[in-house]
Length: 468
Image (cartoon, rainbow, N blue to C red; front, side):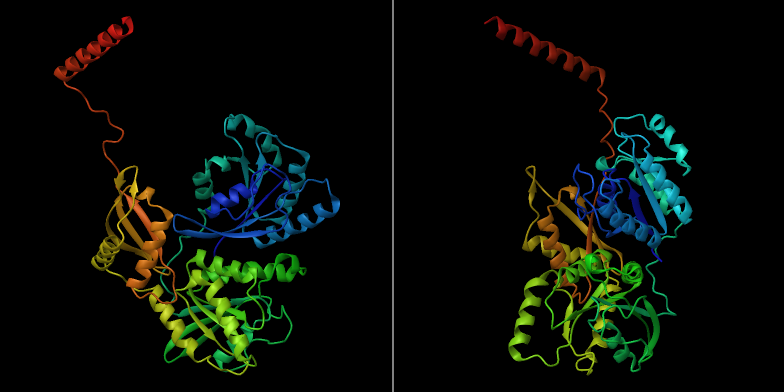
């Protein structure tokens, strides 16, 4: 199971900044203003091929009792969900009474806690850290999140006990398929329809499923593990603690799955929560099958409108197959088996280096790389770096300067060229290192003499010019 890291601390100590650094995103709003984050925010991170989930929480200030109570509850839930707690303190403010209170509570939870000393840029970290030993949480780890300093040693220490993710598929469990979506979209009904029996509880009320349920299944001599997850809805609509804990279970199920079946309700509009879930699936790089449920009972006008909304709002997942079904009556459900197999096959396919290099050359012939500082980017060859999702590594010169627009072009070109169905691909760039970058050219004695004479000549000419 993926490690879950909760960021905890007072307001304005840099939790959201660290969240953005760990997830390599800008999902968390950051400003020099305390109390900006109030609800929990979830993100996906990767470090040295180890995947993890990060939870950003609101800080506790004690200024507004009602708001403080709400944020305290959010923080406590995040701590309960997590396997690791990063307790952030501000090196510039020093230790405060609020830090002591938070540390006292964290110690009682029994969780693995690391004390992170943030905002240490320009300070003597060892001297500042001395007063924080009184919190009883071990050696403080000094970082400067806003400048991305100290992050690698922090992650190395935090993730060291966890094993590296294995991309190989567990043959005993087969293809792992997670069914996700908002509450009451029919996930459990579809799982029962796929299984051909009432294996999970179905009730017309949101929140019936509270935990992820793993169900082994075999069809046509192929093994599957179906994962029925709890529905994920907007945080402001979630009040029960049990349902709050189920959100992290759903995200862990997405991380563990090979193929994700994303379900939406045809009788409701596409909501922000649907887009957030799709975004998390893409970040995790999982193969995707999109299912629009409750298709029965709609007239032709409603069906055309829904198809138009899907084509317009979900253009960023154009690689995924879309099915319009009725899980209750079973219409079009049979098509999902082949779609899941196709998505899994695309996600785990082996691609040869000559083939990928040939596709790269064709892409550059159709649209050559742009100029950067007057020099044309040179992309030399491509090879496969992993599966589920397929990772394509491109080698060349100035690869760190490839514009985002050309990266998107190459991604779409490779998707079409390899006939990828149901899975995103991730393209990474690697450049060669110059062995002489840090070495100065040593001049011979003759070259040193000529250099000194040239300098004297230039100085003499400058003096004459000034006299005029």
